[in-house]
Image 1 (cartoon, rainbow, N blue to C red):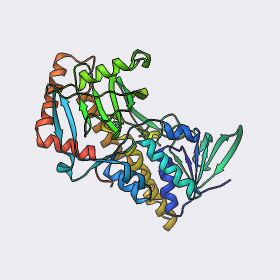
Image 2: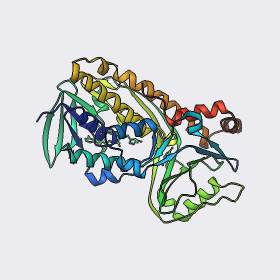
Image 3: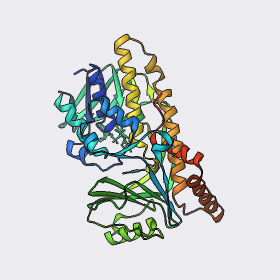
Image 4: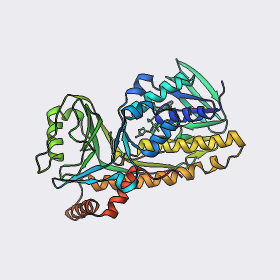
Length: 385
Ligand code: APR
Ligand code: PHB
């Protein structure tokens, strides 16, 4: 079996790449280890930069996004019992859109299958040969080999793509906390996202639709979900999000809950020979800046352009600059995500000096137009270069 581009991983990175290539007449096969239902129901973040919605719309994946996505023009920083709005659109001219990653995955799977795309579920890659190039995978208890011109390693943090880059250098940072995330059937108690800093820890009020709220609490990295019955979650959210002006948090049935560790991670380079890494396979950001999905989209946009040029003209110039082009954006997002994380979370090891500095930093971001512009331009996303 042979194709032009073998794509390992059917998360947002792999599926979108397959769609972008199809629009340019380039054939691909997506190998996804899990089944379709699993991939379509994994709860992840859902804040899209304008550049991300432009890419989705541009490749014909914007229909439901335009109908159901919630366009936002600002966010709120909340600390010391008071809210401070950051008017993202006034400051940058750009918007952000709330639309869950799982919905993007559903839209892309449906599109690929409708246009005859080859997406294989339950197909787990076991070995990648970046120079063959080929991918060996297991499906239905049998071993198969897929030969190709290029391989896209879109197989997430635990995949086989990154280990196939010889001499790969990694950079990482662990944080002394994790996020407990819930989905609840209750109308959001806010129109815009609220990022709250509190002595007891960070909290985030996000949303999924006019009827569904998404909320997060900073917890210890080794926290057991069993220690968090519904009442404790709601009580803690109400305390951390509380203000002095009578704002209240509405509660509802919790339909999904999980604890996610926080990590920063970058692998360099993002290419070896004919293997190209994209998305979580190459980098992880803590979710505070909402950059994970947006980075995956910018990686595959750059890769699709490079492959398009290669097949159209034979030039490998854009393939050769792929890793450096992506890493510039990746490191900017890494810094921003680290910055938002340390700005807003409560470090259990911080001493009084560090806490005073953090409070001063929060006051500065909330009161200085220059600091607010910096937050806003990073949050809404810098232009794709
Ligand atoms: N063979 C085939 N598929 C694999 C293999 C393998 N050996 N290993 C992993 N996979 C699949 C996983 O099952 C998953 O569906 O690769 C996919 C990787 O998808 P994601 O983890 O969603 O990563 P990515 O597509 O890069 O999307 C990045 O996901 O984790 C979030 O915050 C992150 O929003 C960002 C987005
Ligand atoms: C989410 O809605 O899941 C979400 C939003 C913003 C973030 C992280 C997660 O920073």
